Image 1 (cartoon, rainbow, N blue to C red):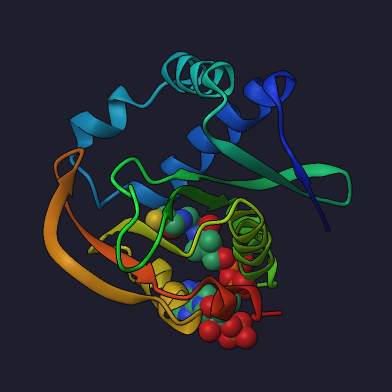
Image 2: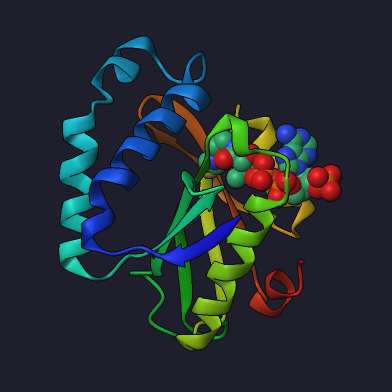
Length: 173
Ligand SMILES: CC(C)(COP(=O)(O)OP(=O)(O)OC[C@H]1O[C@@H](n2cnc3c(N)ncnc32)[C@H](O)[C@@H]1OP(=O)(O)O)[C@@H](O)C(=O)NCCC(=O)NCCS
């Protein structure tokens, strides 16, 4: 399994992975109309825009030469400093079902945490659908703690998890 930084020429690969993983993960968790709105065109627009804006860091994971998943983060827009220092928002981590439960998610989280630390950031947070129990167990296994209030994403309740200390996430092998 290989993890590498992705760039603008990977937009189509990341968009296709994003759509496939969303469909595998969210059927039954978000309203059907929302599922129908998830299209390759929309995802491609999103990732082309994200790569062009150069604020999002994307890691691409492959398994035996085939794209298997990706993760993305950026410096948190609200993290202007303060007691905890500047932090990062993990905006995506998705593996195809065939690539799950083999340590690749843990490796992607660690790779992102190392990049964040390199960028001088101190903490990380993300949001996850409340009904996405496998992902919540995964974040909890890696030391993530729930914080804040329930919000909503595409018609479904979502929760926030955070890591106050990136060193802890970096230590997960
Ligand atoms: C969530 C996800 C990124 C985790 O990656 P992964 O490679 O499958 O997980 P790992 O093999 O690295 O697991 C690390 C640890 O997390 C925990 N964990 C992972 N998946 C779990 C599950 N389904 N149930 C319970 N615990 C789980 C375990 O403690 C595991 O350690 P172990 O295998 O030694 O028991 C991946 O499964 C995925 O992409 N899921 C679908 C998309 C998704 O929900 N993304 C998150 C959106 S917010």
